[in-house]
Amino acid sequence: MARPKHPEYQYLELLQDILKNGVWKKSHSTGVGLKSVFGRQLRWDLSRGFPLLTTKKTYFRGIVHELIWFLSGSSNVKYLIDNNVHIWDDYPYKNYKYQMERGKVKKMEFIDFMDKMKTDSKFCKKWGDIGPVYGVQWRRWPAGDGREIDQLGWVINKMKKLPQKKHFLVSSWNAGHIYEMAKERNESVAIAPCHTLFHIVLHGGKLNLQLYQRSADVFLGVPFNIASYALLTCMLAQVIGYEPGTFVHTFGDVHIYEDHFKQVREQLKRKPYPFPKLKLNPKIKNIDDFKFDDVKIENYRFHPSIKASLTPVGGF
Image (cartoon, rainbow, N blue to C red; front, side, top):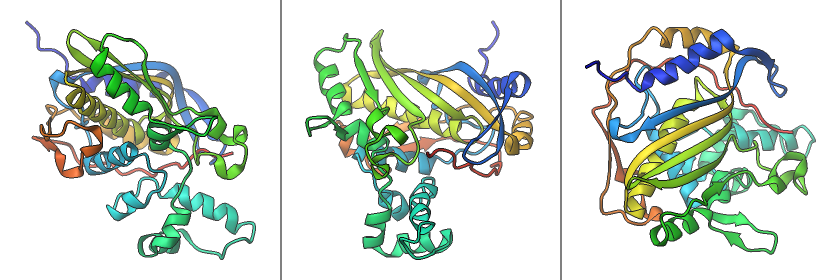
């Protein structure tokens, strides 16, 4: 009997699909060209190992810290900066630069801005807030009547009581906080949510999660997204009381930027290693109690990192 194909090949085949079949587009906010396909899906059976991609090293420490930040419901990047995670740094600087170009704040280069963010807590409190991003929508959705709704808390509590229900959705797409639909510019998110909603369903005694991602940078962003939502699936399964099942990753526009083509072709030459194992602290029974040290990865074998520049898209 033939051995099952390594799950990572579905990601590698998606890269090949885009190179071969993608249509050319251009990012309106950066002018960078990209090749894009629309409507794809990856499925990760979490019983076959934790899907931390192995054909290049994936930044797991940053993944864990970012997810803990989301779960906290915060809109300020201070937690990330304090933990030396800089994946969101471009967005507070974009807000500062907008005011700088209008003469409302003193001129400051990015490196100086980030130094001040690290050392001046008052400055970071003001400029580190990047609007109602994922964590805010998950945990403190601003309702029209002034309430803040904890969508994720509602899912967890209700799923414990009525696990067969099919309406366990958490949305990050809040139209009143997206670009021109926002009442004021400062009430808009820095970038419209790329991973827009996720749906949790119980099947066969296992907790399954499906993410809809409207836009996906498949080389830099998607490996991060895969691991982040697989981790979220496992955390939710533990606190609700089930085994993790499948993480289903459904895409809208999935693309490769033209300045990543060389790196993608290098990655496609590599063969995947066996997936690592995820270990969560079994004592954690409340989603808000997870800390960085409660999440461990074991036997992670990987090919070397492949450097590529992030394209900070989004905005009005």
